[in-house]
Image (cartoon, rainbow, N blue to C red; front, side):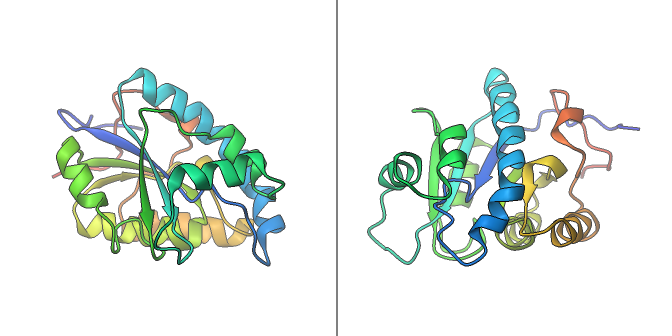
Length: 196
């Protein structure tokens, strides 16, 4: 049963590494699981936008320190990249935010925490790929920064179900994340844990 409504808490939706050409060894395998997650994230994004919740895209800079997010979107969406279906489903809106990251965590070496503070955010909905890597590393750092976490189980994907389920279990146990599927979300969000 869901209790303890988040009162006076401001939420942001983070979409991690879904704008991705999947140009790596296990890219095709990840796409199998990422495509259903992308569809769920798209539905969730539509709902959070109705609620005035900001959407922040987090993406690897692929070691390119002169990376441009809009060019990355175009490359993934319009090219013949394996990840084109993901980018087409989740193409950012003009009012969405974006942060490029050099490593797994959305927080490491990025201005994300400054942006979240500027927006007055204290609750995060983490979505994206890979659940057992970038999403989990981001959840670890978010937890250390004292954000309340929602990681909808239908909105993250890894290269196989077992690793994804283990990541969700870890985020629930270690990071105190609420891992209900996004279809169970009602706004304003409520958590099944007592918030400080």
